[in-house]
Image 1 (tube, one colour):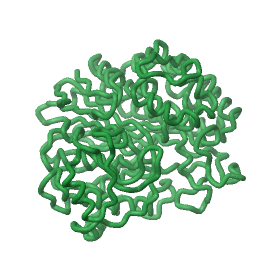
Image 2 (cartoon, rainbow, N blue to C red):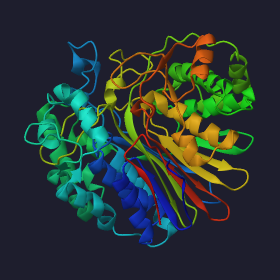
Image 3 (tube, one colour):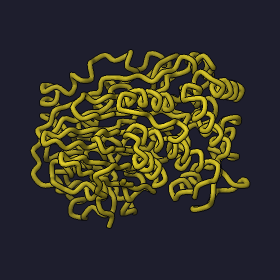
Image 4 (tube, rainbow, N blue to C red):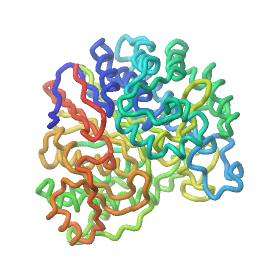
Length: 528
């Protein structure tokens, strides 16, 4: 059994232990929570490349005691040339390859903006020090993780059609085995260049010129002007008041509003017993209400038809809660949203905390690895419709819909919790499972993450929208959910990757830190 990690000096949680240790080492050297997260973010882009990369997007929630949380949107918009006309002859945007690499990679700009937020916190650590572990792992190589091996095997045929994939992620043309050393020397040199020249170079320097040239040559619509124009943005987080805590999440283009709404609706159901059928049914039905509103409204921030914060107001929440039947499941034909991502959290000795997500959308994103820089590029833009008038229609400069949504809770008793997960459609559901178990039903944090989970919607590589349960959920609970009308599928695994890789860190008023990570991942909670 995995137990909650405890410390008073600092904590980093990540779905790969080397990333958690990179962040922990920065905290140990006197760095702050943001600096630790930049180190962890750079490291995990090397050691967990099937889930995230420098050519992907990121979102931040930064907590400083006594101040309002700071949110950073590091989502890259569609290229200036990314129009339906560019995709003439296609009924939809291709899922892999250069045509799928149509949005700017925003995450490095998010690192830069987060370091600006932390500039007033004291003397800064040198950027080369923050990137040192990532550079070392790229040059010396890392042991291929179980999930990287499995997902490479699953998608190898399709991914090997993308330029640069086989050279970067296969070894002598074959699938790397679990534990086999994988080196990424070009990516290591790119990170070393960023450490020397600064993160700005990714968008407006030598590195940007090389990446733009490679993308254009391969057939992507991205150009140097798209790099030059990009900057991450500080945005106002969405929030919702619960009895015990105020919860925060990211606004559009993310599904953060859904994550907040699920928990606010569930609280109104007044379920008394955790892990009961009422607990699961209540969260599942709250998820359906939240997803219906999400899919009606969430799109590029400049195209919203409503204020998302208004959906979290008392009148809206009361109306949605009234539609939840405790004795009957809402029928569920739903268009699922896939996605593969990492969530990480950091906490420093001053109580400053970060909840962070970094993603390339599908496993290995577009599959395109740029020849000069070794940077893997995302395929987030394939979520656009080629109908420009659709809610999420493609257009130059528009931001794609994002499943990413890092979460933060500030409790009335002085505790702070940063938490989150990867898993596309499952992200808000897993957040709801973890938070409700911990906050509403008194479960220790590690148990709240390890306990059996469920997913309403898409699993990796499939498009089914039924309710998937891990095999550890008791048979009587499965039968009761079926009797309520849920279309249930029991997965064979006791701990399934389908349920995402969650983590969390709690900071108590007395300074105690508690960190927990998901046994479904290759990660860890590393304490100072």
